[in-house]
Amino acid sequence: MSEFHNEHEPCYILAVETSCDETSVAVVKDGKEVLSNLIASQIETHKAFGGVVPEVASRKHVENITLMLEEAVNKAGIRLQDISAVAVTQGPGLVGALLVGVVAATSLAMALDKPLIGTHHIAGHIYANRLVADIEYPCMALVVSGGHTDLVYIKSEGSFEVIGRTRDDAVGEAYDKVARAIGFPYPGGPHVDRLALEAEEAIDLPRVWLEPDSYDFSFSGLKSAVLNVVNQRKMRGESPMEGGIARGFQESVVEVLTTKAIRAVKAYGAKQLLLCGGVAANRGLRRELDQQCQKKGIPLIIPPFEYCTDNAAMIGAAAYLKWKEQKFTALDIKAMPQFSLEEWSVQE
Image (cartoon, rainbow, N blue to C red; front, side, top):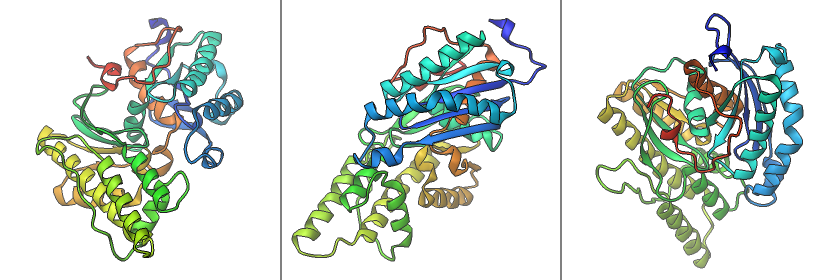
């Protein structure tokens, strides 16, 4: 499909992201200049259920996607015919939600006779950092979100090796469950973060390190420890002490994430540490990671809040890696809810 590529012309990627409960469409120029980035959140819809309901999420994507495609192109100030490629999150994510984006993107690529680029959701989170800074290789990415907690070694552009992952709950899941235990609605992360920063004291909670040389994570035991504290205080008729619990929980999570990430940077000789994913918006984590990286002399990149949560601009940034290599996706693309990041690597 080399006929699509002209290295002297700008590359405009129209990107679609529907992996969970945000519908997002963006236009990204040359992999790093965001011309438009529209996001329709479903938080208020799912709050009533205490979490994301896949069937409801899929229906909301269907309602939003067509108008958002049109608006994203108009806001970018380009014509539909100017688009170089259509990118879409192929996985991981909720299969029904992914399918809405895949069908919309495939239909548009076919109608415009443009190449299609199926894109990995976590690659998107990682390359959201390229929207705000140049990435130097090799580097290390700490991915923290509602569904993922990973340490990813990136030896060269688009070459991914997952060296650590969660063995149970992702950190975002743990935040939501702890928030529910102390009486806050979905999504719980921002509530716990706020309480933790405001609290004057912390309830001591365990740090889960696993094996001495492991870069994996585990948060289910910490979540259980929080529930034990809550139940014990209830049984004794004591006040819940939400602030102390939130601060103790956040300090435990942040210490483990920060320590393992910095150890991985040193062990692999990484030139930078990239923080990415929805939980990268957590102020406590951002502050502690920044302080520790400054002490250790490690360059740290953290995207602004709007590029931490799910958005299509990050998908456009990651898809540009495939565009440069002219590696496109067949139009019989399938949604892949268990998509492997290593499998998506541009460089084998």
